[in-house]
Image 1 (cartoon, rainbow, N blue to C red):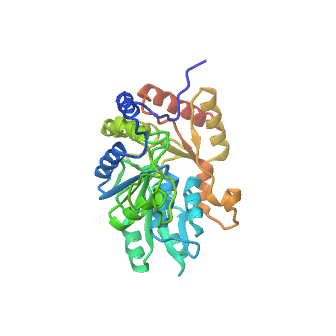
Image 2: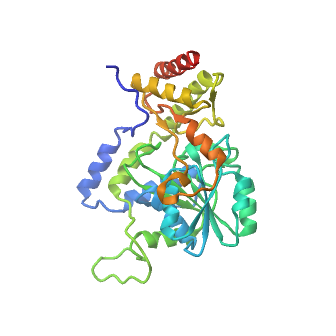
Image 3: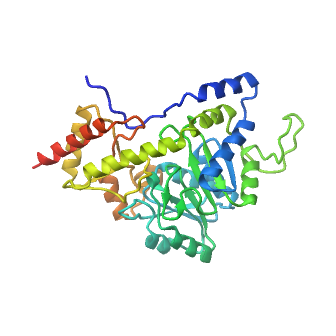
Length: 365
């Protein structure tokens, strides 16, 4: 049996082990000095004033909304095409989720549909930077300023990416990153909220540590604020710091991989590529024929080539079920495939993958 070509996996650098050992030897595993150092490293990468680590990207989005006073009396607009965590984070606030369709070229929230969905109850929008792609933010910033709508960016798949003059993760009232296993930097789980507003940072800092304004002793602490236990740990920060050393190298690997895939796939019949961005986290294709897509998936499986199909639209999940139509989201969701995009993938492997896709297209009747 041929060795699997993996879709993606977290990759260690070797620096993590000594850093984790130092934390273990210190006897202080909790959210401490290494977490603060990790936050400082991240904020410099995305050009933000404040960063605060939390337990996941989902909780990062929730706390960003909560700190901006989103509650059950409000509506929050999100794209229909996103991982379900985006919707779940909004649901935690009690706000009503309003779905918008997406742009067919970059899979991010469609500006015109967003504008149509704005009501007097609209408090925030969560723009999702799908796979390192993003909307044209200038238009969103202008109308949200006029309508007093908070912009939270779900940048969980966009750490290290840029769009025009924007570093993704630097836009809006707050942006949220993820360090789960399928990301450019992984700490197992974990996330971060980044903002330029000190008051938002302070609110989240209090919310994530049970409502404490200052780090206390535990026994006689008095709590005057709402709060939860969403703290990061120095064990996770040690892993993150070990990986951040290779951040620029990993970005270079992504750029080279994306360029190879793009040049080999760009002229194939039935295959549509999304907007090109050298910083895509995973490389994707759209197969504009349902039967052909099934055949491509079959041949990839037969050759131990791992891939992922695109997410279901949010309104197709039972918990968020609705009959509202989102034509672009529904089409993209049915046609999309994320191809193997791990950090160790070689030109030979990419060529092998593309050759299997070409073979299937050439023999498709």
